Image (tube, rainbow, N blue to C red; front, side):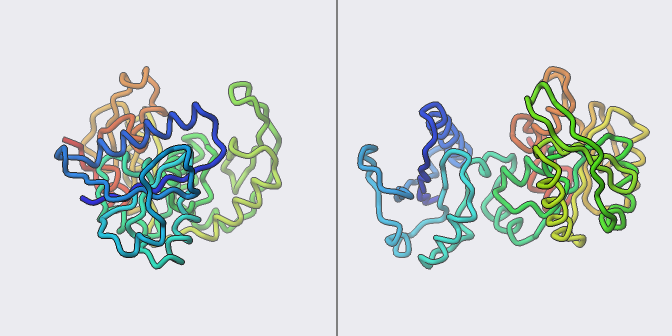
Length: 299
């Protein structure tokens, strides 16, 4: 595989730049299987930085270069503006991939291209949807990003989620979280309480919810949650969604039940569930789940 490395610079601190290099090494290790199969054919810098003494090429030269992938690396970089620039240069944007995306278990370039075209909406009980969209570098086509609700409320919400989202969101109160060191708004939606702990004020939370609820692609929805209750899993399995995943700490034959070993996360089921998509818990092919709703254990 011929790979171009696109280095996106910003004003991050030295410690963060060290993390960038670590992430890039991990991405190459994931791609370079069997070892020696990845060949770097060029390095592009978003802004020329002579101090780095990299043997770089001009972005405009990429149109004449033979490559399979452009691996974008940088501190918490967003891919949308890079794709916009690549398009103006006449480059194939389907070949541009973030380093953190490569680390999602089960990655292949073909699956990545397919998912980019799929317009997937993820409805999640907690931060699973937000983590997935961030790792993928895809737009969040769901209002349930950066917030959480209770297991009971989520199960009440899911059977008629489309209907509930037509109702208005109502601000209840602001709550302080000592662990995060912030105050965040809490809302009610037709009997479901949402804790919007990625927002610091109710106005921004409400505006974002209203924008994203209109982006949901109801023809391609994945719903995710976690529970310790076999009874809740059975109810979840009966929900009318073609793609669904409930992460549980016990073995199950139900197709929507995804067993995760919480011992690997200090007994924390939430962290184990999130680790499936981050790669910290590489138990399943996440791309098969996102694309087809399939439970494919990793070998």
